[in-house]
Length: 403
Image (tube, rainbow, N blue to C red; front, side):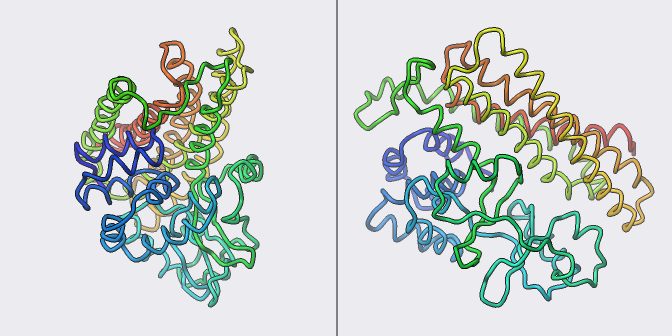
């Protein structure tokens, strides 16, 4: 969804405020604007705000939402604050085990028009998670094959009642972009993005009081409006500017996308992977700042380390993604299939390097400028990862595959 000049800044303000304050901000808004804002912020933030919206406005919002959204909000509200259940989203691509690869691909093509799809989840007749299908498997498998034959069995999942800190310890060495959320008996109830978890963890760490980082107390209703305006408004204006910048990059290469339509399929893959890489680096940097581990003189080592990790992760993932692009382009009889695969590999590697560097540099730079590293890091990081991944990808395609 494209947010206009009203909902975009409002979503940014609510994301950096308390749930109660967020509900107060939505109170004077019309239902369409309020619903757009709830869809724009992280699921955990939206869930927290909804708990403070009562009466007729709550009923209208639930009525205006899709059935899946209303059910997900109602389900998430049953879980405690700070658990995975409060932050999860409705699972997007859910299939039965007897669905063919061809049918799943066609369904995903329609789904990606409305939201990012990273994995396909396979459930039995009772809704229990029995496997996960990656985009790579869908691209490389026989189109007539059944998902039960190509899915990854015994897939890792999180439970909705799991505390975020415990979930983070479980996923620390996995680095998946999306995790399925299932109940103790295996029933799939949602999905949660790694980026959402890292952002929430980064926020919780940065909110810890202590003289080591000089973090102010969380803003409350009693905070004077002048001080609130001073803290919020500059970031809202900057957020609006960066949003236009990211959108402008894609618009600048509109001709290339129109000429090579297959590029649109891989845009969310690059954006999601580079975003997750950046969030990992951001979480480590914020933790180091908060705990006092990042002593003067160690900043350079942190940036170099994250750049190197970005190179390694980007190259390894880029190799897989490049092969996927080559296979898809070959199946479509595209004469530039080899160059397209190389473009994906190069763009993935470079964007992950930039994302790793950005995740480390952004909070360090904001702290040096006297700003709260956590409050605006996500604004700059999202912009940097989106511009880097999509911009490099489309630029390489424009240069290496001329009209």
